[in-house]
Image (cartoon, rainbow, N blue to C red; front, side):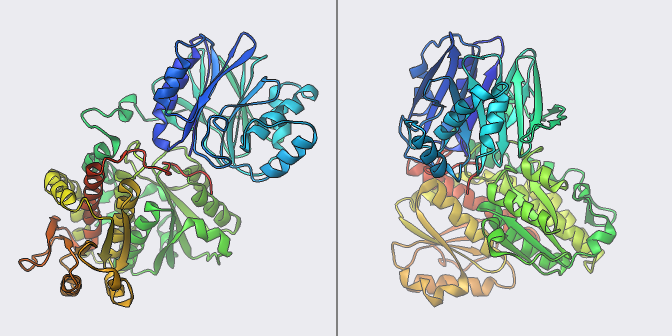
Length: 607
């Protein structure tokens, strides 16, 4: 959720920290702050402002060579100057930045208040600063004080701690919220996302849950909460600084939509097997015997990843004739699920750090479930927890609204369905048909993107609507849900998705001339029924935008978003793209902040 940056080395810290925060703005935040150790004291600048305004408040800076910084997404306490991070202890010696939620914060604050502590904020994080400061006099250094304090903490945290009287080191800890170390030449970096590091280094160390690190300018050591040393070797991230630059685009969402053809091409590279008309997904770690033993597939994800999972479940049932379904990962672990050893669980997350999905993976691990991860970030928590899976190869995704990662999820699910199908009853001819259509997807996506202006014009025509329906059947149902999600999250227009047959069971009462409906009409065996749905809407005065690769009767819809033809099973992947563009251009028409929609964050690492 929030952004963390830390620096220790021979350069001025403030410019590096501010640049790091700028690189993490996409994660969503409502306040920002920075603390550096300057002449034995903490110099703190923080406010409920954007990073650009924080940069102005910091001014020329102090030249300090160690510091920590943060962008906050409010959990405990409103987004105010006082609640912004970093937080200090009473003496101003210990500074802390923290992502996550301390679940026993109320108990800790009450206990500290009884000991005479006066709080300057409403946050759970401030309690950490006071706890660490209280442990310091009886501890053998800052690392031991942090370890002692965390033993009494319940909840999720990714944190960096600075002792201004000992500016030669920072202490870092993780439990449920991502933290990565960046290894430089005589300098060290810390961040909640490699996006803040790649300008300076590509050598990184990912901390695991329950792990601490103490870093100096030229060294680091890692250990567990129980003080056992751990051996962590740096890895090289295959990400360049240019991946986080806008280039010719005005915002990242549009840039990432236009990267989808190439992203899908990368996802397919080396994974389509024409000879045997199947897919090759070596990362899942399952041989032919293990794949044959799968009796059911369940997809687990949140938000757009969940809708992509629904699309994937449909593909598995169609191509592999295996029972499959999708479930929000946020609900899975709380309903005491029955974990079937013959079920293949697929955990889906762009960031690989989604807290609810990670918790579902851990619950499956505890119960002996067979689970693979489908993620876009190598070294992420879900990737490490699963140990096997499929890497999306979508490239860094900055905009809060996911586009190319969701598309690549669907493509990877199609390959998984193809692989499972060819292990069973999917014929060579049908396998070859799907392989050819998958290989053709990048070209078809490029066709849709080339028609962007036509889609933009339709979006502007309906730009004053305050409510919309998205309607789809069977294959189109998850696409409708994803389309409604995109419109809601970036335009703030109320949108709901319904299965076409459900309109008659209540929602039809809302149809009038002010309620446009976006109806998905693939050229399949349900084409006639979908046309009938449009006629029912039009009979009640409702405007209709048809998204279709079929030939429709003249005048049936008020507007049509055309989609290139593919194989019917893969139509949903292509139908998703025009809905992204439609939501984007409606949101720009309304003047929304596209990449940073209100109240949302890119990587949801809290419940």
